[in-house]
View (tube, rainbow, N blue to C red):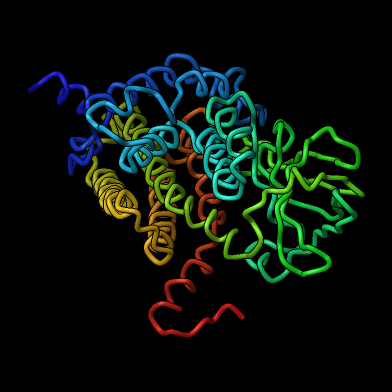
Length: 401
């Protein structure tokens, strides 16, 4: 076995289809550094952070120093490429989510929905100003689309309003479930133009006049993520701080479709984390005089968890291949998100059941994955909404209302 094969076997033992062998040597080295950082610096206090609903100090800065968008390791043996590979994006998200879903979500909001709002929506001047700072984590962002009364139907029911007055806009409205808003430096806020009734996107600072942000308390999932309510009352935004290329719901959909696959990737990583946590428990827990890993019913459930994970990894690898070719198909990504989130829900339930009463105690890790799976099942399009996207393609009929 080569050194590379030994590294992959050590860091991705659950990859029975050997999908990771298609990673470049530089990508493998980067993922090794990422995994080592997570395990060595953040593992010890992770569950306590989940209980306390606190973000580990230094996490965002450490990930910025890894330079996961432009690290030279990620471009070795990839001449002429300016973006990291989609297969790397899968394993990057997978590795983070395998460690913790909250941290993966927190970073994903910044580097996915938030970053892509600027990347797709910004003018050339705005790209120059914001993209390098966001990529290096010198600036933090989020994604303020959903509202108290509108989640999946926000395209039809966007109530936050933007009224133009000369060279500025006046924003009024509310946003809900905005992950990381309380720590974001620049917040892309989506609002409806009162004159044209079309959506637009505005760069709002968290500390400017008229902006009120509070953290949603008492969540049972993604407790580390500071999901927020935002209230906007006569907030003034200059026309130069409007993202110039977001002028329709089609423009917003482009941002959403570009990141939906990452939720399928995240669900897959969470399955791997649940499998690891469960396997560790059954190898140590004794009942009736021997480790419960010796019992047939336990092994059957572990086998099902591995099978769910394997099928999800294969689906993600194929989605990554398509996206590498520039094919960001909404049906494919909806299948990935719907299928993998559903299999995750099934897997964490089996893992929690194997762990018995201890499976509801956060100290044993599986409880964290069990709860966080519920959030993955819901966000970036609920199971039902993604099913309707697929159903529309199958029948030619939109059944959203």
